[in-house]
Amino acid sequence: MRIVFFCHSLLSDWNHGNAHFLRGVVTELAVRGHDVRVFEPENAWSLQNLLAEPGGAAVLDEVRTVYPRVKPERYVLETLDLDLALDGAHVVIVHEWSDPELVKRIGERRKAGGTFRLLFHDTHHRSVSARQEMARYELAHYDGVLAFGEVIRRIYLDEGWTRRAWTWHEAADARVFRPRPQVAQERDLVWVGNWGDDERTAELHEFLLDPVKDLGLKARVHGVRYPDTARAALDESGIEFAGWLPNHRVPVAFAQARVTVHVPRRPYTRALPGIPTIRPFEALACGLPLVSAPWSDAEGLFTPGRDFLVANDGQEMRQHLRALLSDEGLRREIAGHGRRTVLARHTCAHRVNELLRICQALGLSATELNPMGQERVTA
Image (cartoon, rainbow, N blue to C red):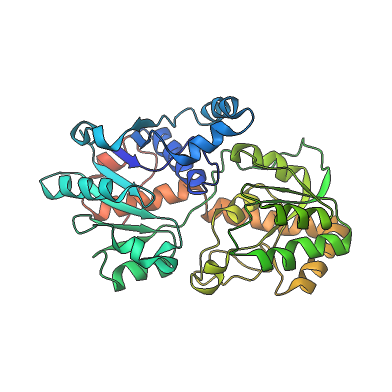
């Protein structure tokens, strides 16, 4: 089966979390014998920011080594030959960071007799936080929407933006995100994430900065777009700020620490229950004990309290961190349970199985879905 992806960027994950998941999916599809093509804009801002980082070009070479099956083709929208790009495609998936004009043009190709199945992929909170932006996408000729949470799936249907939608959560790329027992632990805590454009400033103080300071932990933070005030706050809390970290290096950063925390952005805690975003999947896949600020696991993805601990406020965060850091057995128990859950339910391989079942529902044949007969797809 030929599957064509249109996305923002896959080789660059600079401030671009959905690249983590999609390149794992592309790799899994290619391993199973599918013909996968990936198109991304030539001037993708994530790629430009990666190249502006010290050693950015070398990092890009590293990513190509880690993901040899991810080979994006870059285009300029005004000169993109869609007929050539879509030639022979069975399934086309267009990510919601794509230009609305591209989304419209591909839909028009479908309407004009394109035999491919056409899906729109949403991995952001804009359907809640910026509905007018999302409403401008013309999806009338799309076969449906892949939404990374049930609440977003319902929004697309309730708003009349699509007639069919499926929940398709993100997941961990277990080929890359795995324990690294040979790596020495150098610190108590690591956190990988961006400051959040004021979407979680208070929460970061309550659940990360203040507990680290009060407990006197040795901690490091990686991320981008930290204003001077944020860096000063980290310094005040005794936290080392280590800047941007390419995602393929994150498993080693996780292995160097005893615990991590999850501090979701406000739109996910208030309006989008059931969506943890991708970082908890990756931390658990690496076997790192995790303590999470509150979020509603409305879809039953995990078993809170066993896969990870939940801190309802800053005081509980201090208690959980103190308990984990003082009890190696407890760390092993939480980490082991969380990793087993991810490997059983939440890897890119599981999501590819789900995608193939969706494609089956859209009428693709068993031969197209399973060129190597590796996964039996049932309705």
